[in-house]
Image (cartoon, rainbow, N blue to C red; front, side):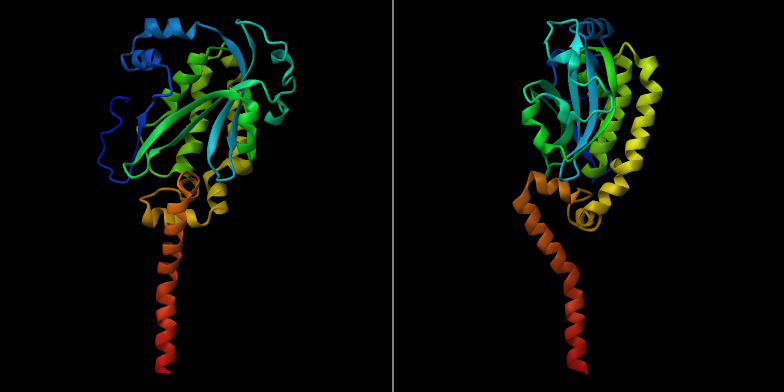
Length: 264
């Protein structure tokens, strides 16, 4: 557990309680601010990564980090995967490995978030991509750098997953600059691409409009929880809550109409 993440006076806040998917030695070094150990870990197995912010059909944002070469053993595919920086992630070969990072629920009832990290072939990830936004090519970056960026990007508490997962993804892209050898070259480009993505569909306002039930039902029944993401996590319970919410909204209208009918 990251220190300090469970102290808050906000009863509606969700906390980042679980980082078990990350390397234990790295998490310990980060918590203890052990700079020597962090430097040693960050110097290992550096690669170049093309980084995308992706959104699934439930408007939940996650990060896709695709290795494209580096100081480790060479894969004949890696250097030719995406020569054009504006290519979409669907140009990645199905059996190329990639990282998927995201802020997700651990336990809804206890208001807990976790950092999820998966290392898999692209074929296992691509069906979950509804929209994607290319952010940049981070060169000379260790896999430990990806994990450290997630720790630095994860806030201590959040209120609405729809908002939180997007902000986490954007902050990750900014924090990752510190662990890229070419950060000076791409810093402005990364910030501009994040702004452009927010202006063309990644913004919270745009995503919220796609799930019109989230603002009313989510904040009313789930303490700020976004209903669309909750449906992805627990669809049966979400449907029950959705029906209950619609009933409570329509009930006063129905009663009023009945009374008018009886009195007229």
